[in-house]
Length: 75
Image (cartoon, rainbow, N blue to C red; front, top):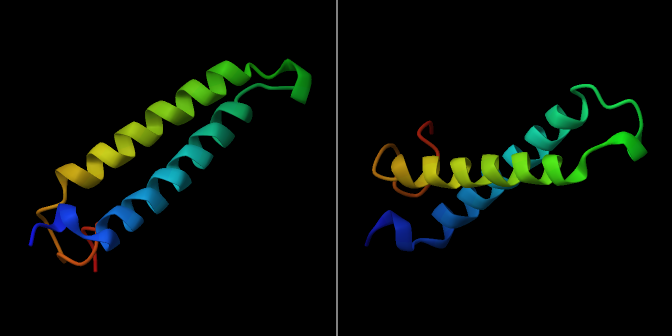
């Protein structure tokens, strides 16, 4: 069975992708925003979405490494 067909792999990948999206959104928010009304929310969403895609692609690229029961390279 391929690692890409396991629910654990996709659950781990989704968890990391959500964390990455939150981290990148917080990074953009903290990079010069003075107030909630001054935030460029489209830019925050765009950066978070791109970071999420990169996270998922990284999980897929590293899918053949490490423990086959986890999307993580470290176990």
